[in-house]
Amino acid sequence: MLTLYNLLLVLAAPFWVTWMWLRTRARAEKPDWRERMGLYRGLPKPTPAQPRVWVHAVSVGEVVAAMPILRELRRLAPHVQILLSVTTSSGHQTAREKATDLYDSLVYFPLDVPRYVLHAMVRARPSVVAIMETELWMNFLHFAQTFGARTVLLNGRISDRSYPRSMKIRFFYRALLKKMDRCLMQTPQDAERIQDLGAQEASVLGNCKFDEAIAGTDADPNEWRQTLGIAPGARVVVVGSTRGEDEEAFVLDALARLTELVVVYAPRHLERLEPLRTQAQKSLGEASLRSEGGGGRCILLDTYGELSKIYCVADVVIIGGGFGPYGGQNLIQPLAHGKPVLHGPHMQNFRDASEAAARVGATQVCATPDQLADALQSLLNDAERREAMGRAARQMIEESRGASQRYAEAILAELPQAQVFRSTP
Image (cartoon, rainbow, N blue to C red; front, side, top):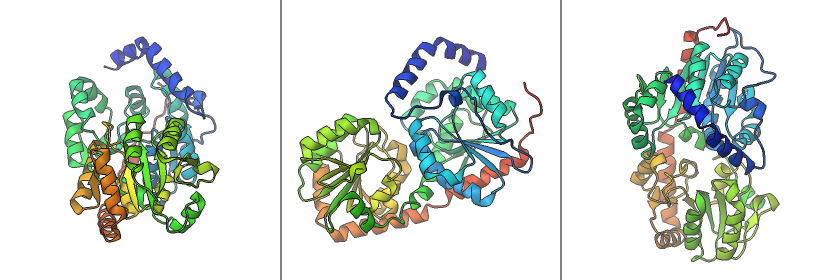
């Protein structure tokens, strides 16, 4: 299977190389292409007394989710060298700005080309490779095991959308998952699904995003209101992580029907900022930028890593990703702040969290702009109901904490089993 995979990789190179070039061209900060070829510079050598754990997080969401696990690794084993890798420049920026004390080295993940992965492994020499969620690459896992590293999947999940498609190529996943020593999953259903795909072992440790959400709850709403230029006493709706023009139109349609409120709006991808600003100006009359001081009826969040704290200013939160067929976005952060949350019906990527929140009455599903506008108006006019939903949200989050420590302990348990690689293949 490895030979066939690499043959297909070569044949498909004109397509994936072009796709990568177009993706990176759209970003303000370009990745380090030397590092993407595995040519890491300045990495300290791991030693038996200071083994290296390589944690891979693809982009912003995975970096933020990994932070509580990294924090627990630091607390439990300060002698361990932590190498954090990312795929995107936005993930790199988030790691630099928000997690600098949680890793020893930060690099770009190598392209899954044998030569590049070999370069990376020769320089990194990890004892454990820990991969966040679902970012599995055949050559990377092959060379990790060749170099004697234990391979662990962290906070693993198999979404409702990807599971049927993955089952159609189960032969590939069976070969891929043979290269994973441990699959540590969020829920029993995720564990069952990855075993259906070929994993030999799957354990349920929970969702570390519940721990990550706690990190932003120390934010001072009065300070953030002042920072964003929001007047004292103004009613505020925070919109988090809409994806695409269809969801933006859906949410802005609902918001345009309400008056006397301030909207703080964070798109999932900053590439959508300019078209979103144009549409927001048409729907709401004005739109300022957070980086320029904010103020006015609509403030667009054009910075990285602040949304988890900015939820503190909200009276009501709207979470995107579920109004269109995108699988939903992270509703755990606003719930941790004790905020009532409105979202769409398509929340497969956060299925367990959204179902648990619905059971305790912390959220409401809105399938049309009319329903979203009505739900917003009702909640903004009912402080007692907002407070009741907020209390239910906080209690649910508190009862779901602790997964990050379990993941960190599982990583450290693999260290004594890691083989010491002594010669270059």
